[in-house]
Length: 357
Image (cartoon, rainbow, N blue to C red; front, top):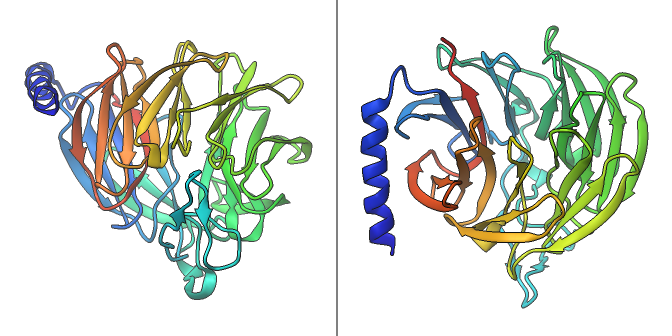
């Protein structure tokens, strides 16, 4: 089966190379947590176009709305080794802190390395690093690209960063271990998840006041929305669930159970809103659900998929497989992995940028 998959991927890539023009319709940027760089991949033929050094522990990664800049979260906090899991898939803690597999050891943190790195897409060049509070991991942007909403995990805050001045303008106190951040469609609010108690904050993007907060099962990792903003989707890593949220009432409509062994990490909604995709970490797969939370399929990918992204045309999904240092390419029409692309060490986040004419 694997040999057939490899053969199909080679045939597909050969056809893609024949039709490629100017690197194809888009580029894929991958943050590599362990090698401190960003891999750039051509969307037309899945070849690596560049490797850009950016700094320590690049993780969260997003593009500016005009696609000309890439922002990547950098951190000088060392990586902790994953703990062992019990029979139910829960971590066996050895430090007595109740912390989990990718959390940080503060003892030897290099705070001078913390910040948001900026990469020029056209030049494929690292420009500079700007302050973003302590230990930034995930963040999102305002629709106009003028603000970054940054989760500062180790200090329990969210920082509001002005991209024009490069300065932190506001700091919001939230719960312990803030992790996922996502701007809601329309840009009036953003959601921020806190791992420890399963708290989710909804924050006004103009006043930076907390509108409300609600609770899901432990360790919510990320957020995404239907295109019309009526529903939010939040995975609970420890419980192996995908929570479907009514974005008008902030109530959990359904907590969908994922296959045994799933440790859901990143959730992304298809451009047309018809399907929802969730990476399952140690589950080694990407789950496919409908917007009501019904499980439709499970796509096997690489080892411990974390960040995922969907191409603008909705044809492909890209999953970052940290331990094997590669990116799975999934053809969404068939819901099959068709190839893998070598990245840097510890690929973590994925973002797609349409090519400019």
